[in-house]
Image (cartoon, rainbow, N blue to C red; front, side, top):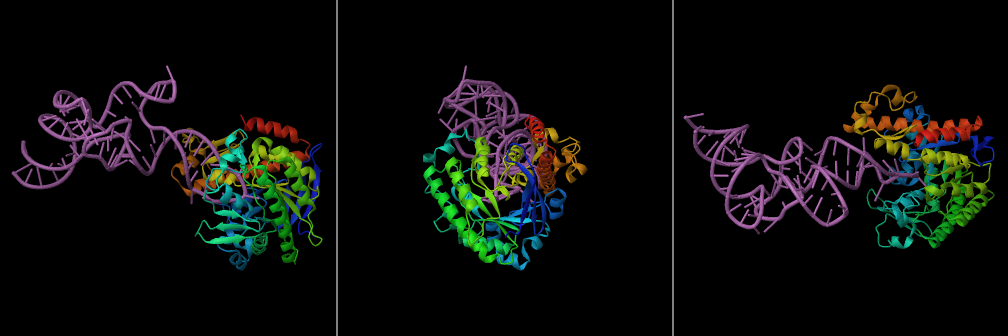
Length: 406
RNA sequence: GCGCCGGUCGUAUAGUGGCAAUUACACGAGACUGUAAAUCUUGCGGCUUCGGCCUUCGGGGGUUCGAGUCCCUCCCGGCGCA
């Protein structure tokens, strides 16, 4: 039995897309939905009231970061994620699987989880013979050895450990411990890593069953397989069907590295196989065009650091594309970021003021920009959802992207 | 009036014979996709077919193969003595 309940209310004709409602112990999520990232149990530079007022329904924190600091036992003592961070809505935690990638193969290499297929150096693994390169995460068969970026201490995270930590953190929805692979790895490695992820998925589920005695927590399994069709399909099948002690995963995450150009194909492979009646979360994505793509292809949940990271760095979403608020042209621009935008930032401040805050390195700049960006992305997904109900998805998508990419 | 010290890219600086010239800030542009990120990259005299070419360290003159660097002189600023 699952602690979440997912109901599909409307499907996208001829496509995998759907709109629904995901019920959690901390409230309902109207899907598709954008999950705001709050890695260390805080959405950077924005307080929970502002996150909620920007329209966010659910936030995602991180296992590895909270395990290191302040420690999952301490979080538990503080009453768990919701109470600690003063967020009353639904929560998720990522398993630490992404840190296997970001602190491992991708560490200090400028490799991100979405690559351009036009960058040949990333597609030729031989050029990435980096066995001697420094890493903070080293993958073993049984788990991953992390060197803390905070104090250099060594921590061995196994699937069991990740699940234990996540139960201590106390989110509504948690993820299996996986290995997010680098796009630069060759097929042989992707294969090995996938077997490992599947093994870890089973162990994650087993540990979760043991700890989930009150049935308050839902566990999502993660599909990997890089950019390879056979691996993606194999993974989707295995993760879908995986059963331990009569229990299956309550939902699914789609993880790993993608090439921007063929992400939609990969999502389709996977969502064609995943059971229709359970929620699917596309991990770490994305940009507006990715959201249309994902929803069209059957994704229910997204999370991404971009709205807040871009916001803190002075890049702001508008329906005509992203702008750099520090550019000279905005220094005396008295208009809001977007006319008619309902967010707190646009209702109260001008571009010139935001430009001033960023030039002056004032903290409020990052806050106001993040509020707008969160509102922009969360609201975009809500509008897409509405377009599904209105049988208007294709038109809305076309009109939005034409303006946005101009 | 005399004596010191000093005038280098918007600002502050480094530079005592090989220099288009250090560093920081400011300024310009860009990047960011399950957050080692309120971070990072890059440009910042002009032109360039990217190999260079030209013009620059208060002004002028000189020494030298070569001067931001040494000498003379003038201008400007600070301090001290009159």
